[in-house]
Image (cartoon, rainbow, N blue to C red; front, side, top):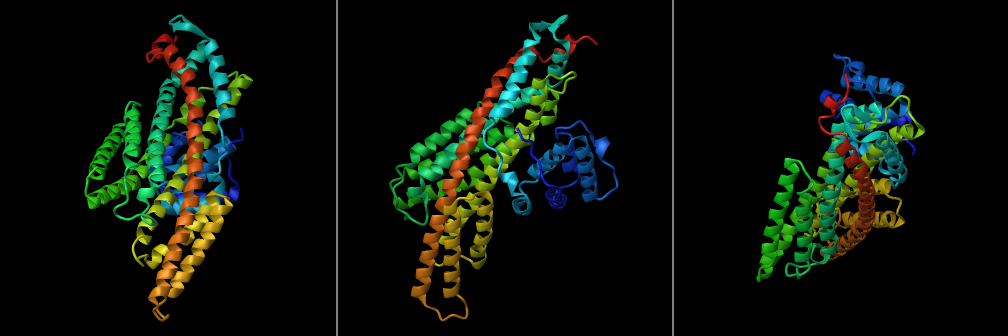
Length: 445
């Protein structure tokens, strides 16, 4: 386990960027959730500019624990993740954020070992006057709400990820009929009903995972959109089936983003402060000390993996939007073509895959050739313009397919990560059963 950290120069650059897109309520909310013990009254001084306030917070938290300062800033970045300028700044100044170590083996082993050792020190059926180790019982009781929330969050993350996986499979496996650059209005849609059914089953399963009302409403809206798309896809008329495919494309654009945002929302509510406080005991055994470090590392690593996944998702949606633009005859606006330059830089920051780098370079050259053929001061040559436009579309397809292949690997890695995390549910449920909601009444004053 290597705690997440940033160099001083990176911290300074990211602090300035974050302070430009957050407000006082964001910083105070993160103070209440970061892993350390300092409170708002310890680090906040009213009346100062936000950038100065944030700098003071990071300095005081860094004195408490140098690793907690990076964890604090990471949480603040996560809170403002919807800001595209911030995402690009993080990619530019601290790309390591998007390259977290894979696997949770060490963290999970440390946490399960500590939880098991602590449970062994409790009475088999704790009751007033017979708790076992009173200190351990108090620790569990103090953090019970957080432990229950984390157990619920693990279920929610797994359920939401399954919905995202089903949507992603619908996008990938449905490409033969959904790809606007390769199919016509009368493309067969026989493969779509089973893919829609898979998404519906994942949504139904997720609705049993104690989701928030807003998340449940979103999934019910997804199911209604699936019903609507399938209805049109089942029509005999080719144009009506084409309309069904258009509805399926719109559904994917909307729901892939929604599923990603829902996972982010669960992560934001992950109370690592109370979770890690479970292992803040005196005296602490080596197992307990290792678990304290693991709790913070696991939360930070999970956050970084969700950021990585989210960035890929944002790029994929932008590629889909460009696909829709390029599907129009000679219809790509100049600004949208120039945006491909940003995509190349971001893809390079996310992946060192040579195929993506080569495809991005070929795409840039194809764009330049088309811009040259359509420049205002160049004599119009419709055939030449059609050729360069076709070349640009072909280069785009190569880039999009390479990017989606890399995204699929990240997607599958995150699925494996969540499967690992589910191993924590058993010891957490054991704690919740042996330390009931009314545990405060069982502890001597």
